[in-house]
Amino acid sequence: MNIKIRGSAQLFNENWWASSKGPIAEILQEDNEVSWMYEADPQTGKSWEPRRDSSGSWPILRKTGKMQDKVKIRPTGVGLFATKTTNYGPFHMTGTSRMVARPWLGVPLMSMPKINESVKKAILKGKTLRF
Image (tube, rainbow, N blue to C red; front, side, top):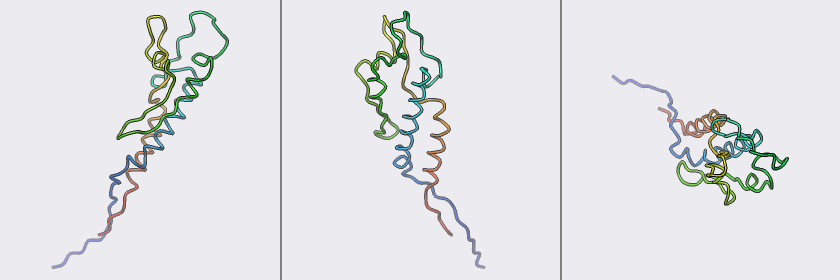
C-alpha cells in the first residue's frame, strides 16, 4: 500500500541574527533618542534627577549636545551592540560621589515589542519545505 502525504512546512532562518541585527540597532537608536527627549532612563522610564541648583537653562545632559549627538548604536558580534559616546558619558550612567546617576542608554521597554516583531520576521523568513 502506498500512502502519499502532501503539504508544506516553514523552515526557520538559521541566520536570523544577520538579517535582524541592523533593524534592532535602528529601533534601539530611535527609542533611546525618545528617552533623551523625555529626560528619562530608557529602561525604567524614570525621569532623571533634576539639577541641585539652577546652573543653566539648557536641558539636562545637553549643555553642548556632544554626548547625545555622539550616541550611535551599532551591532557587533552575536547578540552584542556597541555605542560611541563622549569620555564622560559613562559617569552620567552610573553617577559619581559628586553627581547623581542619570542613565541615558539601555534597552527601552517600548523597544521590546518592535524588537520581537523584527526577530520574528527574520526567523520566519526561512524557506518552505514542500513534501
